[in-house]
Length: 305
Figure 1 (tube, rainbow, N blue to C red):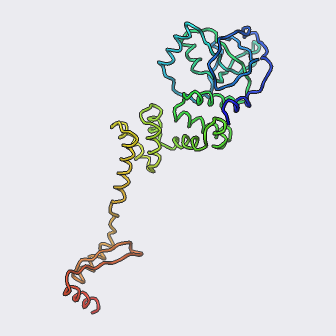
Figure 2 (tube, rainbow, N blue to C red; figure 1 turned 120 degrees about the vertical axis):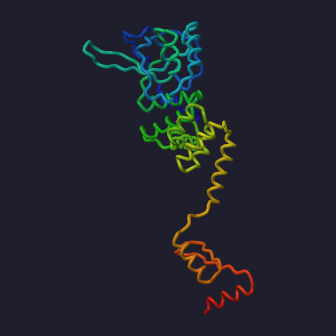
């Protein structure tokens, strides 16, 4: 499904939002850059006070590059905000009448930069989607712009599935990705918190994380992640380390059964030659060693008595 087409189906073509006393007259804004959220040509752009816009609680992006924000803020000081924010209108009854505020749907990076730039008013397009659409738009806006880290994307997908009872396939259709991509992202949340933090901070990549998911023990996952960071390992180098560990585990001798060892000593003392066990007390093999024809004849006589 084409992403733009899917979003158009989420945004019905509505008449212009009625102008409230807190909104400025519709204003012309320079042609915006292409956005993940498609708006109708008839949508009016209003200028509203920055302080009246509340952050989007569904914003999947947790980390913002401060250098990029500062650069965008400098640009806004010179040219203003060229692309309007997408907001929804919220009205609450207070003792003095009706309080009007706005909740951001898409454009959190621009909103933060506008605050740094000291803008008092910013251009907005007002929509009134349901709660599911707000989360979908916030997610798709960021995913399409490739601004989310793998872990932020995973958390957003998980939230869609838990809060709105979506399957992985439904999430994949909403964001224009395959179900396998969504499933692999969500699996990252199975890693220990410390490893997830390393992914968020860019200390290890998603490729490293996929290898760690193949290690069952969480303590080993933590250790291997620390080793990868400490030694600046590539994904291939970490893969080699994981394989070495698995190979070492398969070669480790089995724990000694004290009772079997007692049986072995008793038999050896009785027949005067080394013996060995394989298997367990319930089922296994007993091997008797001999070193010459004479030794074999002696053992046969001893055993057949």
